Length: 299
Length: 232
Image (tube, rainbow over all chains, first blue to last red):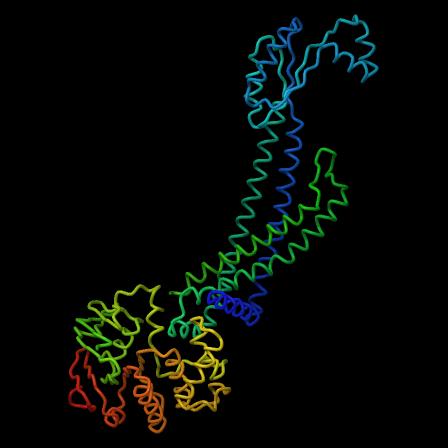
């Protein structure tokens, strides 16, 4: 009961202080707003990049060609060995005859060329299409498969995959860096805002200490004030996320540049992002004010 | 029973000035004590150490069974709730009414609303300001403002009331008003009062215990004492 009473008092005081120092509060709120807009864009970009890397990764396979003289027994052996490799998620097997038929059906040119062979003959090779569990280990897995008996060629789009993984990695690092720097700037600004409210209420704090208010009672209003500033600062970014992303998604019909890059559906996504942004706003406000309270309220 | 016991207390400030040298004192529960002395005699330092604004460099200060000198910063509020403190400059919040100023002390420690109302009105009645509850501090005389400060100090019914030059800013007539209020509180509530002052007339008139300090040394501790200019 007593705790709720004190908390209610703290919240009331915090709102009063936000209104009393309106211009300063507005400055902090706008700074948080700008930061959070950039943070939001970064978050949306990161999630989308992650999403489409995953999509691409899903499509990524190792293609395994067997030697032309591989017998059915050899094929069974390779299947068994593939089952034993931990990173192999799933595979499909096609005989050389199946591939021949498939190619003939696909293209007129292939059809003409391949019809020179007998029905039971094929210049092609028996093929496995292997899907892996962890894309980062695709190289090692391919090397393992290559060592198997009767395996002639293994292909997994080596250069492309490696480059893509490192590119995404550096994009991620850069966005994290920017977001972190912006958050630090915001915290610094909040520290200064709260510092000023503290000095404006110095007399009151002195009296509170004299009459026996606990440190908790004295500090809480300032910390709540920081949280309020953070929450207000996240309103505009949330609105921008919600409407902006929806418009963006509809404008591009869910794809960016090509069919390859699929955007995340806005429906649950924007709400999650809004919640994250609100959370960051409140947390940043809290950290900033807690820092100010510790530094400027020597108690 | 002694409410306050001071043993071998020494206070040396960081700038090298020693304010109190080896002080030993015991103050009984329910007494009214003046601390007198010229400026720089250490009376303010003594009061500050009693409410743990300052820590002694050495020695023990036991208030109500607790060694204040050893109290951690974080726990200071616990002893502040058991004492009231009045200053020369009143320290009222100008934007709050008389009632709100007194209520502030109770709200800070999480008292219930109806309790706050009851206790505040009682305290304001005790200092004779029940008819000024809704006034703001700047609408009151100095003496009245000091009485509001006293009401705030006693609203939580503390065992100890510390006053640091409470009449320092007041003319003789208002000073006597304030002294009468303090005397009533001492007699009716049984609150121990320790008051630092250099107002000769008040000390001589009240005939209370007197602790005389000079340059940080205790020079005199008398029952029904007077202000002795030769001693200090």
